[in-house]
Length: 114
Image 1 (cartoon, rainbow, N blue to C red):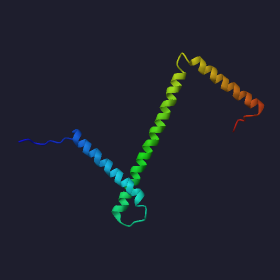
Image 2: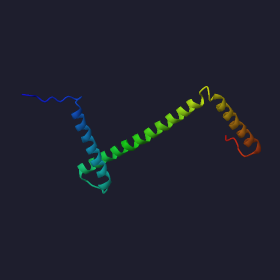
Image 3: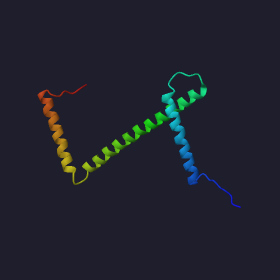
């Protein structure tokens, strides 16, 4: 006689839980768009609200990962520019930008805002 043991670390159980979460998210998100009419039925309201929250979480995580990626890209490029081999070019470029701003300020093409 064999016994079936399910633990929380079982990959089969985690696959089932993951699939259930995906199905619930999909159904509630689609319900949010298809059930847009005002309804007094409580389960319909709750499913639409759950769909709205799932969509906000999904879009927010997409925006957050984009922001983290851009920040990582900026830090990587800054680290690359401040490397010992490239440091002189970075200083020269900075001085050229400051010189250009000074020329624009003297000729009246740029103004300091207060």
